[in-house]
Length: 262
Image 1 (cartoon, rainbow, N blue to C red):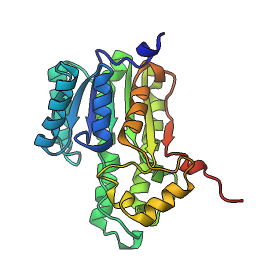
Image 2 (cartoon, rainbow, N blue to C red):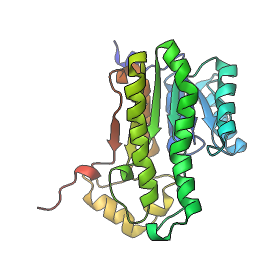
Image 3 (cartoon, rainbow, N blue to C red):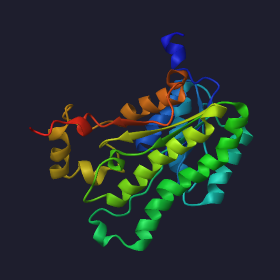
């Protein structure tokens, strides 16, 4: 198999949540470039349409459509799935990227409403979407689910602790799906990015103390860019990743393997 065919997504249909900006936008752009038909989805229709227009102009085809959806609304997610099937007949790839983190600070200070929102949006919505697409993938005998987790799912944090709890659960969700549906040809993996230069993580990388703390111990001495996560998502969804399932791919510039100083 040639290098180009290893990463070819031609004829595949990919739904990516939270794809109007940041990592999600990079993923739909790179999957469309690899030949996939992509669904751009986030809460706001104009933001989705802007991404769609940019992709279609660049690719010279109807490579993308916009289907806005709020991940906290199960009915909205079902409409996302139904409208995708109505347009393109199937869903081959699901990328659960959208997430929430309304609290930055000590876990002692997070209220119940914010705690529940993090767990619901970051875990339950991914579970719902997986339930909605897994039956058709299993029946077809193939499919790929990619969950965007976080390095905070394998580390402790004094400022985004609840977010880390939700992201650890996302890794387990990928493992569970892989275990149950692998015999039916469906793969599921997670990606755990480190600090990436996105609007979502702005509170972290715009803080000079946090930025210095992260980059000083990272072997690559910098934070990541959205396309560096998108490339991994293409790999996991493509023939190149056909023998990988149930895993969490950590992409953090080496932070998690940094020397302790001893």
